[in-house]
Image 1: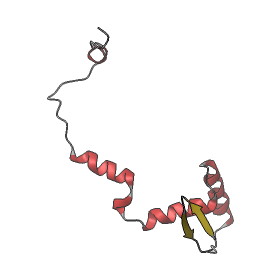
Image 2: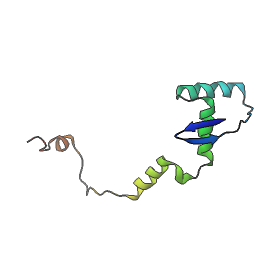
Image 3: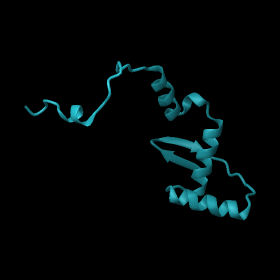
Image 4: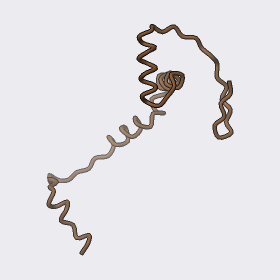
Length: 89
């Protein structure tokens, strides 16, 4: 099978899996609920399982956000200060 996406051809192999009927049914329902085929759903899970942690964009965001510290020097946010801006004057 060859899938074309932006002029890139990806060769895929067929794999046969043995899955209990109840798990198969729930997996198909989950994939459909999330707009994916069962095939695509399994590919995503396998890719996540074998990809290095550094490749996950969400994990990168979390790691980077923990490196930055913002010190508000005990200043507390309140609604009046937030909306009392001189933007329109």
